[in-house]
Amino acid sequence: MLKRLSVLAVICVSAVGVASSGAGAAAIATFDLSTPVVTATSASMDVSMTLSSDPFDYLDSLVLSIHDSDLTSGNTNFNRYGFTPDTVTFLDWLVEYDVGVEGYEVFSPDFVGSPVPLFEGIAYRLGELTVNLAGVGPDTSVTVGLDGGDLSLGTNTDAAGYVGVDYVMSFAEDTGPNDNAFIEFGSGHPATFRTLGESPGVEIPEPFTLGTFVLALGAAALVRRRRRA
Image (tube, rainbow, N blue to C red; front, side, top):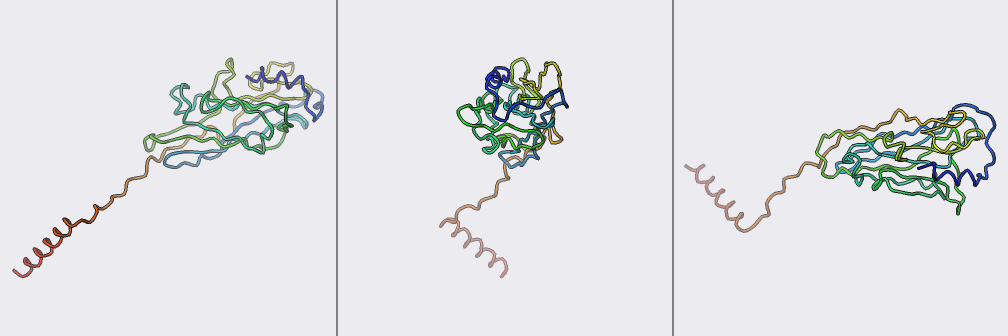
């Protein structure tokens, strides 16, 4: 997926200028998930990404995938999932596809605006990932991950950008001359939690009617007669 989108990025060099020269250190894009916040009907977690590399290296395209996560019916139905991109991180970026439909989203430069690339050494909040748990039984284990998908189809989590003077079109499949770009996942990944299930119902007393009033009077009279006996 990023190979097709990144051709334009190579042609249209970013305004930040040419990256540092030389092979340099390995560039690692690390994706992570925060501790899930779980309610009876949903779970939510933040998605973050940090690029570890030489100064002036940066990313200008990302793919975020939840393929192979639970509650996707074997990657055939992703409608329980949703993703809300961070409006600061992805200001003026182009967002394509939908986690809830295709199981992944693509973030790339919107050349109409002025997107700011993702630089080395900053922990970026990418957005909030949500899971609809309505109808899922209580105490069910659910695992959400970003490391699934098919590399050949471009449905995997990925990144693209400048590493030194080279433009790497896919960190997940770096076959460039230096082969020094990688995708990794943080300590919070994958996120596994247990569902709470629907809240237990509260017994609602029957409405007070004339019939129940008469029965109550009769019961009280019977108690008084027994006490006198």
